[in-house]
Length: 160
Image 1 (cartoon, helix red, strand yellow):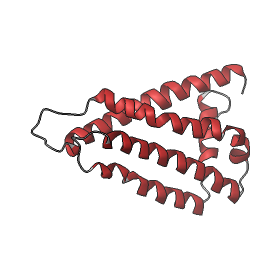
Image 2 (cartoon, rainbow, N blue to C red; image 1 turned 45 degrees about the vertical axis):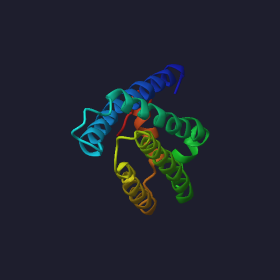
Image 3 (tube, helix red, strand yellow; image 1 turned 30 degrees about the horizontal axis):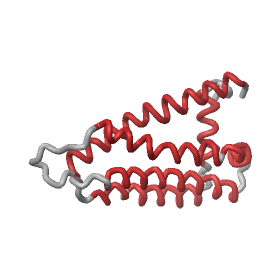
């Protein structure tokens, strides 16, 4: 991947992964918070959509740092090698990053005193754990899948 491939990748990560996916996730959490987590539904207090997007941005920064900076030196090793150990390490890094993202979202919403039962926002951690265990059992390498996806997106390599 040359210079322009890297530029396209950075644009993709920022615009699509961070902003567009963030718009979707923020909207979902905004709906859940206002529909199901407000302590007094009859009050005029609600969670602003911009707050939800801000919480997403606060949560996505560590995720991007772990996945795109911390794991970057090992991308080729994790993505090319079919070793069980590399699959385990790569998927563990992904599980930590996504789990941390979910936890920071929880912290952002638990800071609002007018929300109740915010702990339900931690329930996706159960699904994440099950997917992680299943991926280790069947050797589904997340890093390999994502590298292939990004290479296809930036036009460096075509999927078969």
